[in-house]
Image (cartoon, rainbow over all chains, first blue to last red):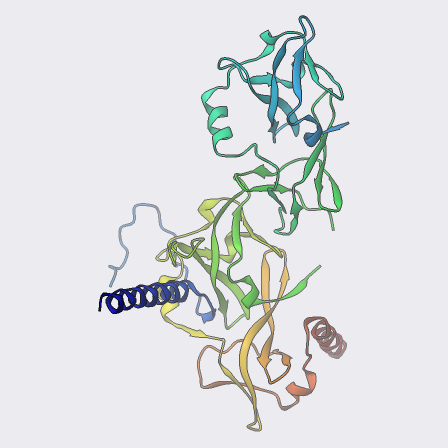
Length: 56
Length: 148
Length: 186
C-alpha cells in the first residue's frame, strides 16, 4: 500500500519536473518575426518628458 | 620568449640567500599594456603575494630568480577583486574577435621574458599574433579581428 | 565581404559587450522589417533555463557586428527595455516560420522553415527562405520580401526553378540573379 503511494509520488514529481522543463524551454524559445518598426517621435524629446500622449 | 605554461607553478628563489620565496600561481596580465606586469605567488607567508614582473631578474629552466623577497607587494583592493572575478584565469577562456567569430580556446600565452610583452596567444593548432586586447572578461578574451 | 546564414541559427547566440568582454544575454527572436527585408533588431533573453525569458530588446543600430559565434555590442547599454524598444510594434507582428509559400498560379511550395540572411558587419538582409521538404530542404530567393500579413507569401511561378538545396549553391543563385539585374539596368 505504501509502495503504491511512494510510486505515485515519484511519478508526480517526475511529471512536474518534465513539465516544468518543457514550460521553461517554451517560454524562452525564440523565432523569426516580421514586425513594423516603431515610429520615431517627430519632435525630439527635450528631456523633460512632458507634452507626451498618455500611455494607454 | 617564454610561455605562461612554462612559468606557472615555477619556484621563485631569491638570489641573495637562495631562499624559496614562493611559487607562481598565476600571471597578471594588463590588457592596456598587452604585457604580463606581475605574478601572483602562493606558498608565501603574509599578504605580499604580488611579484612585479620587472623585479624578476632571471627566468631559468628550473626557477624564477629575484633579488630578494622584499620585492613582493600586497595586492590592492581592485586587483584583489579582479583576481576573485577570474579575470586573470586566462587558460581555457574563449578568444573572440571583435567581429564575433571564435578564434579558439586559449591554451597558452607567449611573452617576452624581459619586458613581459605578450606576443602570441596559443589555441589548439594555431599561434595567434597579438597586437592588442580589446577587453578581458570572466569567460572571454576579445581581440581585434584580422584585417580582411 | 558578406556571408549567408540562417536566421534560426542566430537564436541562442550570445550577445557580448566589447567594453567588458561579458555576455549580456542571448538572442531570442530575430525581428525583421517586412518593408525593407532587413533585420531591425532582436529580443534578448537571459542565459540558462531558469533565467529571464525576456531581458530587453537590441535594436540593429546598437549592434557592432554579427559574428559566427557571437553578436557584439559596444556595451551593456546597447540593450533597451521593451517599452523603449519596440513594445507596441511587437503587437503588430507575424511569425515568419510556418508561413506557406504559394506561387502566383496557385501551387504551394511548402512552409517556411527558416529565413536566409545575408550578413555584412552589423547589417543582415533577408535574401531567401528555406522550405522543408521530405528528404531535403529547398532554399528559394525572395526578391519580393517578407510577408507581414496574409494567408501566405505569393511568389513568382519560376521560384522553384531558382531554388538551391544548400547555402553554397544558393550563393551562386543570388550572384546569378544580381548579374542579370545589373545587366538589365544601371
